[in-house]
Image 1 (cartoon, rainbow, N blue to C red):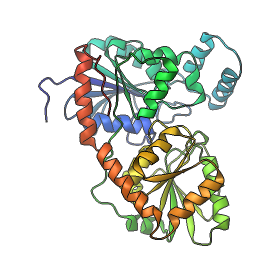
Image 2 (cartoon, rainbow, N blue to C red):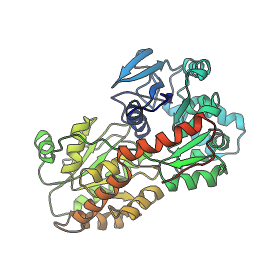
Image 3 (cartoon, rainbow, N blue to C red):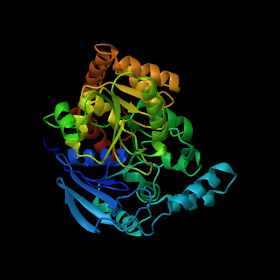
Length: 404
């Protein structure tokens, strides 16, 4: 399908590549690949692969990934994670000036003079710039160069740093904002007062492999019996340390055979335990096979604007158990009837026990979740929403924001 006028779209994101598994980065790549059938899509990004240090990994210059043109620029300086963590604690724990926040953003990174100059010089070459994630320097400094052509996909959630004063003007700058959920929109509007900025609740689509096989996953990784799956960045910021503690505590009192399979990499060491299986980074095929094979997918994060792991689990036919302190995850479970949520270990234990019961609530939750994901997060729906909103940005008639 072709539009009558093929717009030139630039997506700006901190990292980009087939090996990059971060939620916002994956969202960006999938969107770029799907919009590329309608528009002339380019991605503007850095050479970084690792989000903790922003070390240059990919060669700078022009690349092509799955048919999408990618422009990579070197990161100016590597980040020291320990120094940055100390700076963040100091900033959040005491009164400070606006300039302190700007220095925090420079340390947050990734800073790329080449990327900023490219956006500045090429502003007339693109009809729309779509910036992913409010949190990083590529969005904070880049969006200010092209606010009249900017669409922001903030992937925002209630976390300490979002209350820094430098972010409030950012949410008022873009021509249009695309939120992942209604919860995210309400939160950002309350926080920044940007009610006047046109917006839409869109989300992301999920591509399922043509062939799913939980049995293939079990054979490949020598897994028998029930297992709980976690998919994503293995990090304290994702509350993985609490998940590990909860699971090992649950395992002590559970009579059946049960393992925790961890798919993903991160900075948090996974303890050596016979019932904890760390697989590291896995292929898309293995991930979906694993999601189908799992009895339950647990999402422990307190901070999410939308969980792709939740949608993927549902589409693979598996129920979810999520952290109820995350309003987005909790509301998605309530809307879909596709999962349970917990606020304490006792609720975690009860929810997991219920879903591990044969022929019980887990099967009903899984089916309801699958139906919800298909009806709200198919790519055909997401593509239609972007096709409706992007021309509004280019012609300046973006005052009639839409929502789902």
